[in-house]
Length: 405
Image 1 (cartoon, rainbow, N blue to C red):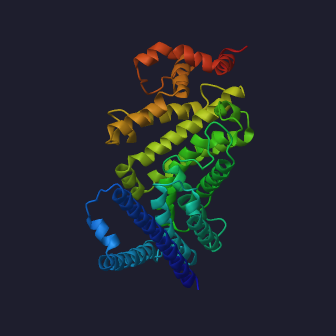
Image 2 (cartoon, one colour; image 1 turned 90 degrees about the vertical axis):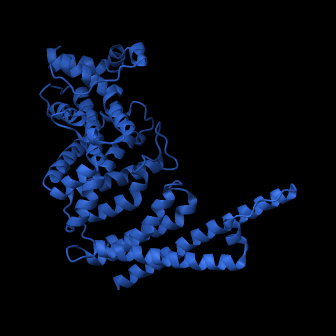
Image 3 (spheres, rainbow, N blue to C red; image 1 turned 45 degrees about the horizontal axis):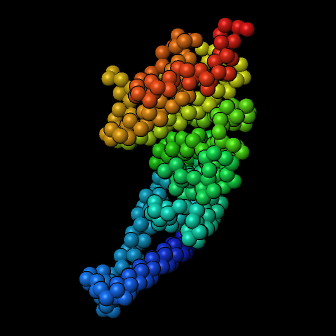
Protein backbone atom coordinates (compact mmCIF):
# COMPACT_ATOMS: atom_id res chain seq x y z
CA UNK A 1 0.00 0.00 0.00
CA UNK A 2 2.71 2.50 0.94
CA UNK A 3 4.62 1.58 -2.20
CA UNK A 4 1.54 2.50 -4.25
CA UNK A 5 1.33 5.81 -2.37
CA UNK A 6 4.97 6.41 -3.22
CA UNK A 7 4.28 5.81 -6.90
CA UNK A 8 1.22 8.04 -6.70
CA UNK A 9 3.28 10.91 -5.32
CA UNK A 10 5.96 10.26 -7.94
CA UNK A 11 3.29 10.55 -10.63
CA UNK A 12 1.95 13.79 -9.14
CA UNK A 13 5.50 15.13 -9.03
CA UNK A 14 6.04 14.25 -12.67
CA UNK A 15 2.77 15.86 -13.72
CA UNK A 16 3.56 19.04 -11.80
CA UNK A 17 7.10 19.14 -13.13
CA UNK A 18 5.83 18.63 -16.67
CA UNK A 19 3.38 21.48 -16.15
CA UNK A 20 6.15 23.83 -15.09
CA UNK A 21 8.34 22.82 -18.01
CA UNK A 22 5.41 23.22 -20.42
CA UNK A 23 4.68 26.66 -19.03
CA UNK A 24 8.34 27.61 -19.47
CA UNK A 25 8.20 26.37 -23.08
CA UNK A 26 5.04 28.37 -23.83
CA UNK A 27 6.59 31.51 -22.36
CA UNK A 28 9.76 30.97 -24.41
CA UNK A 29 7.70 30.42 -27.55
CA UNK A 30 5.71 33.59 -26.89
CA UNK A 31 8.83 35.62 -26.15
CA UNK A 32 10.60 34.52 -29.33
CA UNK A 33 7.46 35.16 -31.40
CA UNK A 34 7.13 38.65 -29.93
CA UNK A 35 10.78 39.45 -30.63
CA UNK A 36 10.45 38.28 -34.23
CA UNK A 37 7.34 40.41 -34.74
CA UNK A 38 9.01 43.45 -33.25
CA UNK A 39 11.97 43.13 -35.59
CA UNK A 40 9.68 42.42 -38.56
CA UNK A 41 7.74 45.60 -37.80
CA UNK A 42 11.02 47.52 -38.03
CA UNK A 43 11.74 46.02 -41.45
CA UNK A 44 14.53 43.86 -40.06
CA UNK A 45 14.93 40.13 -40.41
CA UNK A 46 16.44 38.04 -37.65
CA UNK A 47 18.97 35.37 -38.53
CA UNK A 48 17.35 31.99 -38.19
CA UNK A 49 18.90 29.81 -35.50
CA UNK A 50 18.69 26.13 -34.59
CA UNK A 51 16.41 27.06 -31.68
CA UNK A 52 14.04 28.82 -34.08
CA UNK A 53 13.87 25.68 -36.21
CA UNK A 54 13.05 23.50 -33.21
CA UNK A 55 10.34 25.89 -32.02
CA UNK A 56 8.69 26.95 -35.27
CA UNK A 57 9.08 23.93 -37.60
CA UNK A 58 6.50 21.23 -36.71
CA UNK A 59 8.62 18.19 -37.68
CA UNK A 60 11.65 19.28 -35.72
CA UNK A 61 9.48 20.46 -32.84
CA UNK A 62 7.74 17.09 -32.58
CA UNK A 63 11.06 15.23 -32.62
CA UNK A 64 12.45 17.56 -29.97
CA UNK A 65 9.36 17.07 -27.80
CA UNK A 66 9.58 13.30 -28.12
CA UNK A 67 13.25 13.38 -27.14
CA UNK A 68 12.54 15.65 -24.16
CA UNK A 69 9.70 13.39 -23.04
CA UNK A 70 12.00 10.38 -23.03
CA UNK A 71 14.67 12.31 -21.11
CA UNK A 72 12.03 13.55 -18.67
CA UNK A 73 10.72 10.05 -17.94
CA UNK A 74 14.17 8.46 -17.71
CA UNK A 75 15.42 11.20 -15.37
CA UNK A 76 12.53 10.89 -12.91
CA UNK A 77 12.52 7.10 -12.90
CA UNK A 78 16.30 6.92 -12.53
CA UNK A 79 16.27 9.46 -9.67
CA UNK A 80 13.44 7.59 -7.94
CA UNK A 81 15.18 4.21 -8.27
CA UNK A 82 18.49 5.70 -7.11
CA UNK A 83 16.79 7.09 -4.00
CA UNK A 84 15.21 3.73 -3.25
CA UNK A 85 18.59 2.05 -3.52
CA UNK A 86 20.17 4.66 -1.26
CA UNK A 87 17.57 4.81 1.49
CA UNK A 88 15.74 1.46 1.46
CA UNK A 89 18.53 -1.04 1.92
CA UNK A 90 18.72 -3.86 4.44
CA UNK A 91 20.60 -1.60 6.87
CA UNK A 92 18.01 1.19 6.77
CA UNK A 93 15.09 1.65 9.16
CA UNK A 94 11.44 2.71 8.91
CA UNK A 95 11.05 1.37 5.38
CA UNK A 96 7.33 2.15 5.18
CA UNK A 97 8.03 5.79 5.90
CA UNK A 98 10.96 5.73 3.48
CA UNK A 99 8.48 5.06 0.64
CA UNK A 100 7.34 8.64 1.12
CA UNK A 101 10.85 9.94 1.64
CA UNK A 102 12.16 8.65 -1.68
CA UNK A 103 9.15 10.09 -3.54
CA UNK A 104 9.59 13.38 -1.67
CA UNK A 105 13.26 13.47 -2.62
CA UNK A 106 12.35 13.53 -6.33
CA UNK A 107 10.02 16.47 -5.74
CA UNK A 108 12.55 18.23 -3.53
CA UNK A 109 15.20 17.90 -6.24
CA UNK A 110 13.06 19.97 -8.62
CA UNK A 111 12.18 22.51 -5.90
CA UNK A 112 15.85 22.85 -4.97
CA UNK A 113 16.75 23.52 -8.59
CA UNK A 114 14.11 26.22 -8.97
CA UNK A 115 14.99 27.83 -5.63
CA UNK A 116 18.50 28.50 -6.92
CA UNK A 117 16.98 31.02 -9.30
CA UNK A 118 13.77 32.18 -7.63
CA UNK A 119 12.68 32.69 -4.02
CA UNK A 120 11.23 29.58 -2.30
CA UNK A 121 8.18 31.61 -1.17
CA UNK A 122 7.19 32.90 -4.60
CA UNK A 123 3.57 32.13 -5.43
CA UNK A 124 4.42 30.11 -8.53
CA UNK A 125 6.06 27.47 -6.30
CA UNK A 126 3.08 27.05 -4.00
CA UNK A 127 1.75 23.89 -5.76
CA UNK A 128 5.16 22.23 -5.35
CA UNK A 129 5.53 23.37 -1.75
CA UNK A 130 2.01 22.20 -0.89
CA UNK A 131 2.64 18.75 -2.35
CA UNK A 132 5.93 18.51 -0.42
CA UNK A 133 4.10 19.33 2.82
CA UNK A 134 1.52 16.64 2.05
CA UNK A 135 4.19 13.99 1.42
CA UNK A 136 5.94 15.05 4.63
CA UNK A 137 2.74 14.83 6.69
CA UNK A 138 1.89 11.36 5.36
CA UNK A 139 5.44 10.07 5.76
CA UNK A 140 6.24 11.22 9.28
CA UNK A 141 3.05 9.60 10.59
CA UNK A 142 4.89 6.32 10.04
CA UNK A 143 7.95 7.43 12.01
CA UNK A 144 8.21 7.02 15.80
CA UNK A 145 7.62 10.31 17.61
CA UNK A 146 10.93 9.91 19.43
CA UNK A 147 13.18 9.44 16.41
CA UNK A 148 15.38 12.13 14.91
CA UNK A 149 14.59 11.19 11.32
CA UNK A 150 11.42 13.31 11.09
CA UNK A 151 13.49 16.40 11.89
CA UNK A 152 15.97 15.53 9.14
CA UNK A 153 13.12 15.45 6.61
CA UNK A 154 11.96 18.84 7.83
CA UNK A 155 15.43 20.35 7.71
CA UNK A 156 16.16 19.01 4.25
CA UNK A 157 12.90 19.78 2.49
CA UNK A 158 11.74 23.01 4.13
CA UNK A 159 14.72 24.71 5.79
CA UNK A 160 17.74 24.03 3.59
CA UNK A 161 16.43 26.20 0.70
CA UNK A 162 16.81 29.15 3.12
CA UNK A 163 19.83 28.12 5.18
CA UNK A 164 22.00 27.23 2.17
CA UNK A 165 22.44 30.91 1.21
CA UNK A 166 21.21 32.59 4.44
CA UNK A 167 18.00 33.50 2.62
CA UNK A 168 15.06 35.02 4.47
CA UNK A 169 11.32 34.56 3.96
CA UNK A 170 9.56 36.91 1.55
CA UNK A 171 8.71 39.30 4.41
CA UNK A 172 12.09 38.91 6.12
CA UNK A 173 13.72 42.10 7.33
CA UNK A 174 16.88 41.76 9.40
CA UNK A 175 16.05 45.02 11.17
CA UNK A 176 12.64 44.11 12.57
CA UNK A 177 10.10 41.45 13.48
CA UNK A 178 8.97 39.32 10.54
CA UNK A 179 5.99 36.94 11.12
CA UNK A 180 7.01 34.37 8.51
CA UNK A 181 10.63 34.51 9.64
CA UNK A 182 9.43 33.72 13.17
CA UNK A 183 7.61 30.64 11.84
CA UNK A 184 10.73 29.61 9.94
CA UNK A 185 12.97 30.18 12.98
CA UNK A 186 10.61 28.12 15.16
CA UNK A 187 10.83 25.34 12.61
CA UNK A 188 14.61 25.65 12.62
CA UNK A 189 14.67 25.31 16.38
CA UNK A 190 12.30 22.34 16.23
CA UNK A 191 14.68 20.54 13.86
CA UNK A 192 17.79 21.51 15.82
CA UNK A 193 16.31 20.22 19.05
CA UNK A 194 14.89 17.07 17.46
CA UNK A 195 18.07 16.05 15.65
CA UNK A 196 20.26 16.75 18.69
CA UNK A 197 18.14 15.06 21.35
CA UNK A 198 16.33 12.17 19.65
CA UNK A 199 17.93 8.84 18.74
CA UNK A 200 18.20 7.63 15.15
CA UNK A 201 17.21 4.11 14.22
CA UNK A 202 18.60 4.75 10.72
CA UNK A 203 22.32 5.40 11.11
CA UNK A 204 22.71 6.37 7.46
CA UNK A 205 20.21 9.21 7.79
CA UNK A 206 21.95 10.25 11.02
CA UNK A 207 25.44 10.29 9.52
CA UNK A 208 24.67 11.67 6.07
CA UNK A 209 22.09 14.26 7.08
CA UNK A 210 22.20 15.18 10.78
CA UNK A 211 26.00 15.07 11.09
CA UNK A 212 26.54 17.17 7.97
CA UNK A 213 23.66 19.65 8.06
CA UNK A 214 23.26 20.50 11.76
CA UNK A 215 26.06 23.15 11.75
CA UNK A 216 24.51 25.08 8.85
CA UNK A 217 21.11 25.09 10.53
CA UNK A 218 22.61 26.24 13.86
CA UNK A 219 24.57 28.99 12.12
CA UNK A 220 21.47 30.19 10.27
CA UNK A 221 19.40 30.24 13.47
CA UNK A 222 22.01 32.34 15.27
CA UNK A 223 22.34 34.76 12.35
CA UNK A 224 18.59 35.36 12.00
CA UNK A 225 17.23 35.04 15.55
CA UNK A 226 17.08 38.83 15.98
CA UNK A 227 13.91 38.76 13.87
CA UNK A 228 12.04 37.37 16.84
CA UNK A 229 12.14 40.93 18.18
CA UNK A 230 10.16 44.01 17.17
CA UNK A 231 13.49 45.77 16.63
CA UNK A 232 16.47 43.61 15.75
CA UNK A 233 19.01 46.38 16.43
CA UNK A 234 20.97 45.41 19.53
CA UNK A 235 19.29 42.00 19.54
CA UNK A 236 22.21 40.30 21.32
CA UNK A 237 21.78 42.52 24.38
CA UNK A 238 17.98 42.38 24.30
CA UNK A 239 17.91 38.59 24.06
CA UNK A 240 20.50 38.30 26.82
CA UNK A 241 17.75 39.49 29.18
CA UNK A 242 15.24 36.86 28.03
CA UNK A 243 15.47 33.45 29.78
CA UNK A 244 13.98 31.57 26.81
CA UNK A 245 16.72 32.68 24.42
CA UNK A 246 19.48 32.38 27.02
CA UNK A 247 18.50 28.75 27.57
CA UNK A 248 18.45 28.10 23.83
CA UNK A 249 22.01 29.34 23.44
CA UNK A 250 23.15 27.12 26.29
CA UNK A 251 21.55 24.13 24.59
CA UNK A 252 23.10 24.99 21.22
CA UNK A 253 26.54 25.18 22.80
CA UNK A 254 26.07 21.73 24.34
CA UNK A 255 24.68 20.26 21.11
CA UNK A 256 27.48 21.64 18.96
CA UNK A 257 30.06 20.21 21.33
CA UNK A 258 28.27 16.85 21.38
CA UNK A 259 28.21 16.87 17.59
CA UNK A 260 31.97 17.26 17.51
CA UNK A 261 32.35 14.26 19.80
CA UNK A 262 30.10 12.22 17.51
CA UNK A 263 32.22 13.24 14.51
CA UNK A 264 35.38 12.13 16.26
CA UNK A 265 33.87 8.71 16.96
CA UNK A 266 32.95 8.21 13.30
CA UNK A 267 35.83 7.51 10.90
CA UNK A 268 33.61 7.96 7.85
CA UNK A 269 32.70 11.46 9.05
CA UNK A 270 36.36 12.25 9.65
CA UNK A 271 36.99 11.53 5.98
CA UNK A 272 34.05 13.74 4.99
CA UNK A 273 35.43 16.63 7.06
CA UNK A 274 38.81 16.31 5.39
CA UNK A 275 37.16 16.59 2.01
CA UNK A 276 34.64 19.25 3.05
CA UNK A 277 36.28 21.47 5.71
CA UNK A 278 33.47 24.01 5.41
CA UNK A 279 31.24 21.73 7.49
CA UNK A 280 33.69 21.91 10.42
CA UNK A 281 34.20 25.66 9.92
CA UNK A 282 30.44 26.25 10.09
CA UNK A 283 30.23 24.32 13.38
CA UNK A 284 32.99 26.50 14.84
CA UNK A 285 31.31 29.68 13.61
CA UNK A 286 27.94 28.66 15.02
CA UNK A 287 29.60 27.78 18.33
CA UNK A 288 31.49 31.07 18.53
CA UNK A 289 28.29 33.04 17.95
CA UNK A 290 26.40 31.01 20.55
CA UNK A 291 29.22 31.54 23.04
CA UNK A 292 29.19 35.27 22.33
CA UNK A 293 25.43 35.35 22.97
CA UNK A 294 25.71 33.24 26.13
CA UNK A 295 28.62 35.27 27.52
CA UNK A 296 26.64 38.46 27.00
CA UNK A 297 23.97 37.03 29.29
CA UNK A 298 26.59 35.89 31.82
CA UNK A 299 28.05 39.40 31.97
CA UNK A 300 24.70 41.21 32.22
CA UNK A 301 23.56 38.82 34.97
CA UNK A 302 26.70 39.72 36.94
CA UNK A 303 27.98 36.13 36.83
CA UNK A 304 31.18 36.73 34.90
CA UNK A 305 34.44 35.17 35.97
CA UNK A 306 37.63 34.43 34.09
CA UNK A 307 37.22 30.76 34.98
CA UNK A 308 33.71 30.54 33.57
CA UNK A 309 33.37 27.46 31.30
CA UNK A 310 32.11 29.61 28.43
CA UNK A 311 35.17 31.83 28.63
CA UNK A 312 37.44 28.80 28.45
CA UNK A 313 35.46 27.26 25.58
CA UNK A 314 35.41 30.56 23.67
CA UNK A 315 39.19 30.88 23.89
CA UNK A 316 39.67 27.22 22.93
CA UNK A 317 37.32 27.51 19.95
CA UNK A 318 39.03 30.68 18.70
CA UNK A 319 42.38 28.84 18.78
CA UNK A 320 40.90 25.93 16.84
CA UNK A 321 39.24 28.27 14.34
CA UNK A 322 42.40 30.27 13.60
CA UNK A 323 44.74 27.27 13.64
CA UNK A 324 48.53 27.16 13.45
CA UNK A 325 51.29 25.37 11.58
CA UNK A 326 51.43 22.74 14.32
CA UNK A 327 47.65 22.39 14.47
CA UNK A 328 46.09 23.33 11.11
CA UNK A 329 42.48 24.40 11.28
CA UNK A 330 39.68 23.49 8.85
CA UNK A 331 39.81 27.13 7.75
CA UNK A 332 43.40 26.69 6.61
CA UNK A 333 42.30 23.82 4.36
CA UNK A 334 39.94 25.97 2.31
CA UNK A 335 41.44 26.31 -1.15
CA UNK A 336 39.61 29.49 -2.12
CA UNK A 337 41.58 32.41 -0.63
CA UNK A 338 38.68 34.86 -0.88
CA UNK A 339 36.35 32.44 0.84
CA UNK A 340 38.96 31.80 3.52
CA UNK A 341 39.40 35.55 4.13
CA UNK A 342 35.63 36.08 4.30
CA UNK A 343 35.17 33.46 6.98
CA UNK A 344 38.17 34.72 8.94
CA UNK A 345 36.94 38.30 8.82
CA UNK A 346 33.42 37.34 9.91
CA UNK A 347 34.70 35.79 13.15
CA UNK A 348 37.78 37.87 14.01
CA UNK A 349 37.06 41.40 12.85
CA UNK A 350 33.48 42.04 13.91
CA UNK A 351 33.00 44.22 16.95
CA UNK A 352 32.04 41.41 19.37
CA UNK A 353 35.20 39.47 18.58
CA UNK A 354 37.26 42.64 19.01
CA UNK A 355 35.69 43.13 22.44
CA UNK A 356 36.91 39.74 23.70
CA UNK A 357 40.28 40.27 22.03
CA UNK A 358 40.75 43.32 24.29
CA UNK A 359 38.79 42.35 27.37
CA UNK A 360 40.13 38.87 28.15
CA UNK A 361 43.86 39.79 28.08
CA UNK A 362 43.22 42.91 30.15
CA UNK A 363 41.01 41.45 32.89
CA UNK A 364 41.88 37.75 32.80
CA UNK A 365 45.39 37.62 31.38
CA UNK A 366 44.11 35.28 28.66
CA UNK A 367 45.36 35.79 25.13
CA UNK A 368 42.80 35.40 22.37
CA UNK A 369 43.77 33.90 19.01
CA UNK A 370 43.32 35.78 15.76
CA UNK A 371 44.99 38.88 14.34
CA UNK A 372 42.63 41.67 13.39
CA UNK A 373 42.92 43.41 10.05
CA UNK A 374 45.00 46.57 10.17
CA UNK A 375 43.59 48.74 7.42
CA UNK A 376 43.76 52.52 7.31
CA UNK A 377 40.03 52.59 8.03
CA UNK A 378 40.57 50.57 11.21
CA UNK A 379 43.23 53.03 12.35
CA UNK A 380 40.99 56.01 11.61
CA UNK A 381 37.99 54.91 13.64
CA UNK A 382 40.10 53.68 16.57
CA UNK A 383 38.76 50.27 17.54
CA UNK A 384 39.89 50.49 21.18
CA UNK A 385 37.76 53.56 21.73
CA UNK A 386 34.86 52.15 19.73
CA UNK A 387 34.82 48.89 21.71
CA UNK A 388 34.87 50.82 24.99
CA UNK A 389 31.96 52.94 23.82
CA UNK A 390 29.80 50.07 22.56
CA UNK A 391 30.52 47.75 25.50
CA UNK A 392 30.58 50.39 28.22
CA UNK A 393 28.03 48.57 30.41
CA UNK A 394 29.67 45.16 29.91
CA UNK A 395 33.11 46.51 30.81
CA UNK A 396 31.75 48.14 33.95
CA UNK A 397 30.08 44.89 35.05
CA UNK A 398 33.25 42.89 34.33
CA UNK A 399 35.33 45.31 36.42
CA UNK A 400 32.82 44.98 39.27
CA UNK A 401 33.02 41.18 39.01
CA UNK A 402 36.83 41.18 38.93
CA UNK A 403 37.65 43.98 41.36
CA UNK A 404 34.47 44.32 43.40
CA UNK A 405 32.35 47.46 43.85
